[in-house]
Length: 253
Image 1: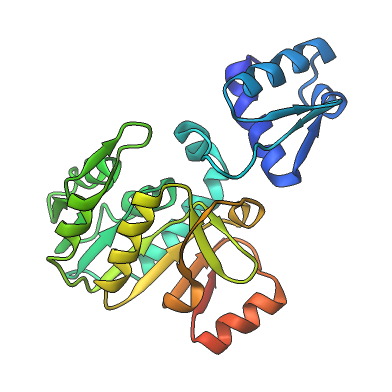
Image 2 (image 1 turned 180 degrees about the horizontal axis):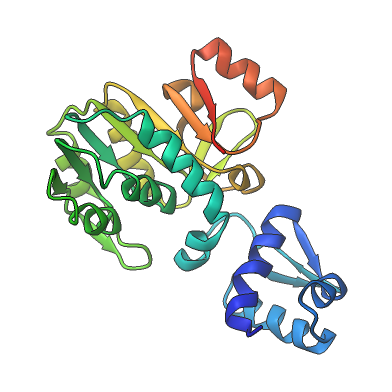
């Protein structure tokens, strides 16, 4: 197995467990300790892990991991979440899809829908839905974030303010145990908050790995969305809070 295949899986293991060790990874991949040490050093040089004695940990929660790593991370769960979410989206509505690999997965599940008007600040979502001739696609404009095809900034927010969406489907970078969902980019947070204000109903799509991550900027609370689609049971305290808020929790897969 080449390091091109090992690296995303190493990052995923680190995200799930908080730390990886050289010995455990060598056993897992069936390679030498020296090979794993080289992998971890390369990942540290790229800012995706931080080296510690005997292994590595996730970096501090101030920058997001790379887009391709995010796309591969928990991909099967994202697909299951997207299918569950898409099943709740009727034909013939106005819909907003924001930035993120989870919302891109939802877009993929909407290719057979009809009569949708989809507005997005995600170039990847626009490209996916461009293949559905029965779907109208509107791109917000804004500052292009080349790392993931996201459009952020004042122009994106101003475009969104011109609409009132039947439904918005949004993602996030991290979820706190108190139900706050978070992001890394302040400009994206402003856009996401504008989406929430301009939507009659909002769904959040997020897999369980977001509960083990941190990010510095608060978007909103699960109390502010109508349904939360995820792949694993949330903590009992948060589940009780969602019930009190009237936020439906939908478990996919």
